[in-house]
Image (cartoon, rainbow over all chains, first blue to last red; front, side, top):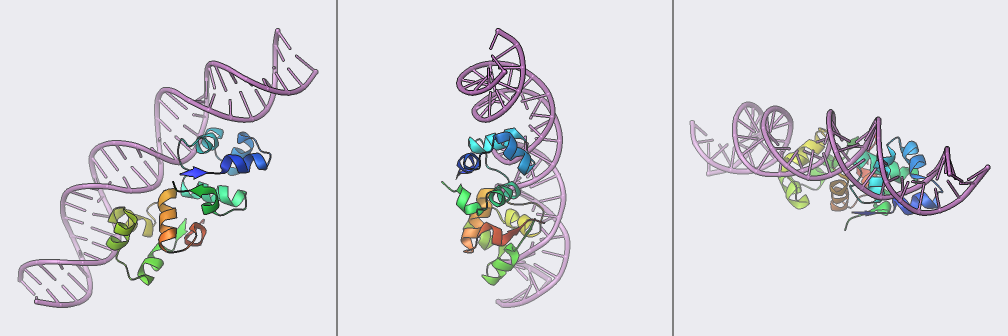
Length: 63
Length: 63
DNA sequence: TTGTCACGACAAGCGTGCTTGACACATACG
DNA sequence: CGTATGTGTCAAGCACGCTTGTCGTGACAA
């Protein structure tokens, strides 16, 4: 799985901490998703997509 | 999280076993998702959406 | 009755998703 | 210089996602 979270976050001018707070998760969780350490859960993926006004499929790409 | 997997599966005329084989997961996994025991992982949710030609958001609804 | 299929559910085990807390490093700013 | 911010990463712990194997039940055909 690849994702565009970092690009979207930077385009929105947010730090990892700020995005984490908006999503109500820890900063480490945002960092881990951006760096590909693991995939988000389905509810978190949907929350990320909604935050950036995108669909899940637009942000998360199956390898 | 609510989902429409059962309705989509039945509309497609598939058994839980057949859908599980198509998705390459166990029958118990399909059953657990349909009965709401847990949410699928993100890759599995995307696979389910693709199988039914829907988006993730069309099938999985945040409470 | 016997066999088979679909479905629901349980248990044990393993890997992952997420947490808090901590540490290191680079960059920028007083 | 000292301090703050942003990021990467580690450890320990807990809950969830998924597995195989098993069992029970209802429906339905032979």
